[in-house]
Image (cartoon, rainbow, N blue to C red; front, side, top):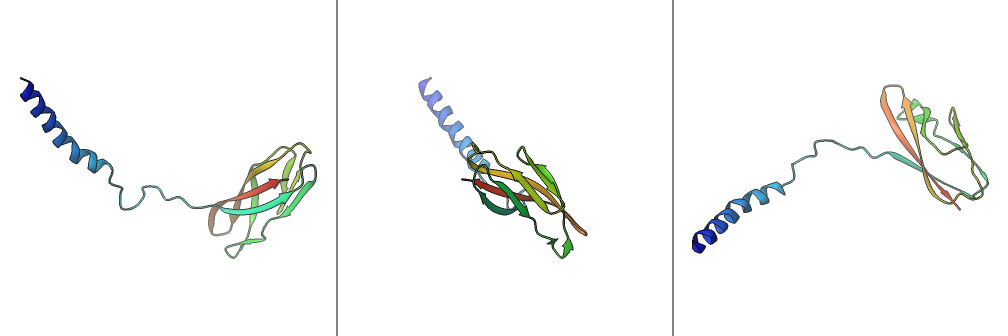
Length: 116
């Protein structure tokens, strides 16, 4: 009886090994393509205002911008991003801005701001 159990276990391992090996195979290409967002970097002293002018054109067309996610006391007017920082704020913050240009799909622009 013990021999049958050992043979059954070895047989099960022999059948399971190819399945385990197949499950680790990666597809030739990803199912979903990810596109890296353009990133702008800025630095500001905590407590000081940050005023940043965004690029005027994108892929040959006039760019328009819309704030998707930003910190409190920040706003976007046309191409100008403004943020009134507080003295206690520190670290790295990411602002998400949607960029639209004629004939181009909307794109996400990331603004990485380092607060000193």
